[in-house]
Amino acid sequence: MVADIQKILLDRPTIDARIALLAKEIVAAYGTTEFTLMPLLTGSIIFVADLVRHLPMRMRIEVLAVSSYPGRAITNQGPRVLYPSTFDVAGKHVLIIDDILDSGRTLRTVRDLLQSQGAAAVRTCVLVRKQIAQAQHITADFIGFDIPDEFVVGYGLDYNSYYRNLPYIAVLHPHVLGR
Ligand code: IMP
Ligand code: MG
Image (tube, rainbow, N blue to C red; front, top):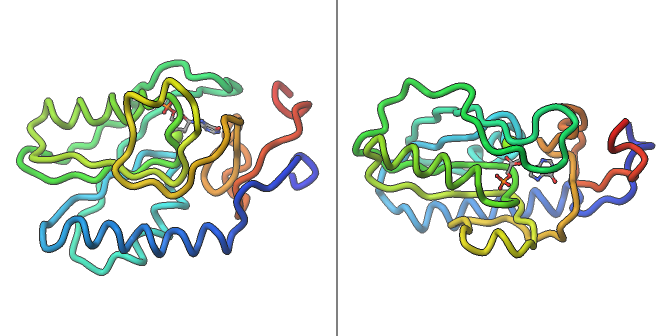
């Protein structure tokens, strides 16, 4: 697996340090307002596991499964909600957690869904944001890192469901894509 890596963009100590600060930003922004954390499966699993252990307040965690890049796709095929939560969002403050902000369609789809279900407020948090022009009309409230517009894996991010377990965020050798 490591032989497939071309370069590491963000190593584990760098990610760990940033997540601790991101948690402080979230604590400061919500104050005493109770919120529900909504991690998007599957990409956010590693990030959210690390993040929640820096969040000391009482909160609910409710997952939602969304897929935009089925199988070997490395371009966005349009977000689809695969596992809708049965959680009643009406009147709730929800913080959506995702691994990466690329086109922004995933966050927009989920945010619109929660708002149509009567959420009191919806905020968004991503570990990384890709620097691409299309992303400009949607951003996230809490962002870990800005990265170049490259297809990345690791720390929850996958290619064809592989590489999520890499403890860093990396770029694959081009010959691996499409394999
Ligand atoms: P968006 O809807 O275009 O913002 O894409 C966000 C979703 O696509 C994320 O939840 C990721 O699962 C996936 N994604 C986007 N870029 C990458 C990437 O570089 N590597 C792996 N998955 C990605
Ligand atoms: Mg995802």
